[in-house]
Structures are given as C-alpha cells and as structure tokens.
Image (cartoon, rainbow, N blue to C red):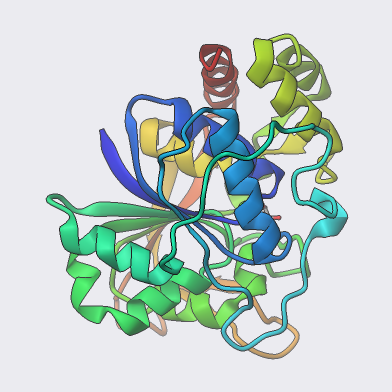
Length: 303
Ligand code: BDR
Ligand code: CA
C-alpha cells in the first residue's frame, strides 16, 4: 500500500482522481486536504466531503487548506468546473466532517507520526505544500516525494506558457521546486495526450452508481480538446499505481513568478543555468491506450 496525503481543489478531474484513490486498495490515504483553485476553498472542501460521503468513507481525516495563493489574487476556473466545482450530480446529504486542524498542521501531524516516508500528491495549486515546507522544514525528510499535477514544457492552458495549477500560485510552486524534495511533475505534456472520448464517457454512465455519478460530472466538465476531455489529475493516481505508463525525464525546472510568462515552468534543457542540478522528473510521454484501459477498469471496479 502506498501511504499518501492527497491535496486537491475539486474540480471535476480532481473528483475522478479522488474516486479512484478512495476505492483502490493499493492506496492508503492518510489525509485529504483542500486548497483554493478551481473554486473557493469553502467549495473545494465541501466537494471533498461530498465524495467521501458518497463512498461511505466518513472517517477519513479531511482538513481545510489555504483560501488564497501566497501572494497572487485567486482567479478560479469555475468557467470550466462550474460554480460549485462539481456540478451535474445530486450528491447525498453530507455526513463526513472536516477536522479542526488546518491542512498544513494536519499534514505535519501525519508526517511526525509516519513510520514510513509519505508521498504527497497535489492536484491543485501548491499553496498548502509551500506552507508546509516553510513552516516545518524539519519534516521534509519524511516526505518520499511530491507527485504534482501541473506545469508544461510545451504550451499552457491559461496563457501560452502557463498551466493552471502553477499559474494559480507560482510563488508556492517556486518554493516547492526549490525544496530539494524529490518531485514527479505530471503536466499538460501528457495530460492533454490522454483524452477521454465522448463515446467512453457515454459508456461510463452505464457502470453502476459510481459510473452514473462520474459520467454526470464529466458531462458538465468544460475542459475539452479535439478528441475528448482531459482527465489531468487522474494521471497522478495512475502514475502512483502504474508508473510504467509514463516516460519521465530529469530536468531543472524554474518557475516564472512575475511578468507576462508568470506561471511558466521552464526546463533547463541545455543545463546552462542549474550547475548540473536536477529538481524534477517530468512526464514527457504516456501510453495513452494503457491509461484509457486502466481508467475504465478502475471505474468498473468501483461498483
Ligand atoms: C489543472 O487545472 C485544474 O483546472 C484541473 O483540476 C487540473 O488540476 C489542469 O491544468
Ligand atoms: Ca485540480
């Protein structure tokens, strides 16, 4: 079992990722934390509660995280994920609860008590993680790695160069990339290759109670490209379970924190600026058909 802390801003692709993480027996979620991003932190927290209730996992600790990026003003993605962040499905009355400690304190608590290194998976802006690094530098040795959805080497989705999660809080991303904790970066270079076709989304609707819920969310999801809808965040969970689907390359990644290229993740491809240092394994390719097969299989198994 892989012990993880899962930090999210659900968000429809976050919701699909969380559904798999909650139901796959190989993943051991020690803590779920929310962050502002796709919608406000009040809404992303509520969405975590909706999903844990849906999957009858009311005892899983859920902590509320940062309401705003470290320095920037939040500009959300409700134009893609709807006003609530998870539209299209009528969830049952919430029975899960938020714990009283904030996300960063709760993360620190998990790390202090961990008997083996913990992987931190982030599918929203990295604000909580940056605060963990700043407030608890003594605990970094207990983090196995960060698996991050975010960034791009080949073109952005909020500007020509920036991906949404990094763009939302570039100052946090800058802290995370300088932390010296091992990083696996799963960005648009692979997530935009593995699109879920409308035919498959149609089929998912016939896969029981969970398929029905996920299909309704996917239909309401405003992110689409020619050929289907990208399930960006699902790739972090897929990577944990099936790393062989991904081709990674070591780079030094620098985050641009101001100006027109704000939020860009620049790879030092010629090793000119980083003295030979490398700070991230970046996903540059994906086995698309294996990912698609795996995703359908995961959803089928949820019922
Ligand atoms: C990322 O941005 C968010 O809108 C998605 O949930 C995903 O985490 C993709 O750029
Ligand atoms: Ca997300």
